[in-house]
Length: 511
Image 1 (cartoon, one colour):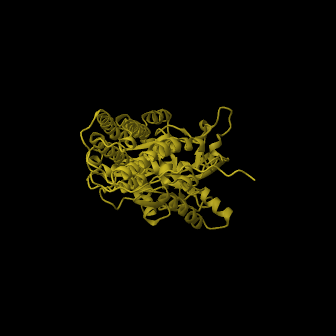
Image 2 (spheres, one colour):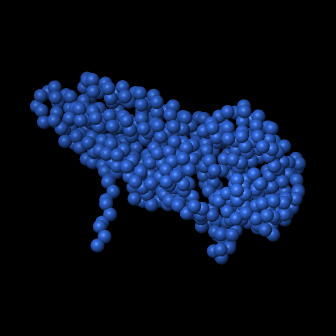
Image 3 (cartoon, rainbow, N blue to C red):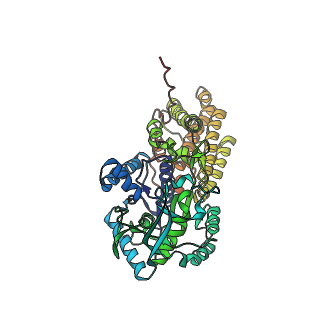
């Protein structure tokens, strides 16, 4: 069984989960579930990043210890995972000893090899991003971009990692591994960044300025720079699990691609002689009216509000259907409701209810055997075959939004087929030919619905399970076999009804 290791970025515990966090978890979960269905032995990691100056400052504002603050916020991030139906195998916290042990070992190894040295830094520092800045980071008018927050000038001794020594190696690596970053144009952006000479990376903070971090193993007067600590979590979480590393994919937001994940991280791994992962998926931002949703801009959306109101599967469907992986996508409640009402309530929900209702009315709640296929049945089967053959390649290429678009074309076509065959009319006929056609129609409706439910498994696992349940079907074959048109439902007893996507009730008028 092939091993498939996938991770999300670990979330910084300086604020509550928002839509961007939820999307990244759902996207990674869809990939993980898909790979499991394809027969891979999947290991799915997520977690929280808990050290650094911002955490220390936030804890002080609340009058509590940094560890207590990290415990509280980490628990909040962990608690949303089951609510979003996330199937992670592990949850790592950078305050855990299993992580700190690996960080100390890597630091000591690099120090012993001469890749880390003590030097003096004079320059600008962003507390919000916890990074040192250069003049080239300023806006054209000389101001600092808003994302850096307050920027101060400092002079201090620190330890540096020889980043620039490995710059040529990284350029060569990216040239030889053109698919290392998805989408491809992001890799070109990294190569553009690398046209400028790299500065060595400051990888420590003096304890008098920052206590909340992992002490350097070779100098207890300093703690580790939060990025150097956090980027090792993907490896530290599985270092004791043979055969898991190197990873297949790391799923992150585009804002932390350059330089942390596309420059610092591969060079750190290379210098430490740790094999690199297959690649990085850099997804886009959720925006509102074109502006990024984030904690700092104050327009972040609480994902659990929609999950509570409409269910995890509807929420997952919207995120995956609406965003092209790698691109930005705008979010509004109105957009969500359009997708919910048209695709889920009208098309899929209506199909489920029609299928169950007709089978109960005209076939004693049992799926009959299909007779000879007529032209409408052949057309629907041909459309499914086309959809099936496109579906898996689209998943392999992370084109989930297109896969869902094709699937819902098929679902709409099932409803159109039902209108054409009109089983409610056939059921009233006493003609034996009409009764035979009715049985074929009911069998075709049920089989089409089963196939749609099977295809939805990675994205809407709860919905897929409920569709199987009401159709009286227990999958006992591989996913690929589940996606093949057949007679798997023949003789199955179906439920009376299933309301999966109730229409939202309008708000009561104000008195």
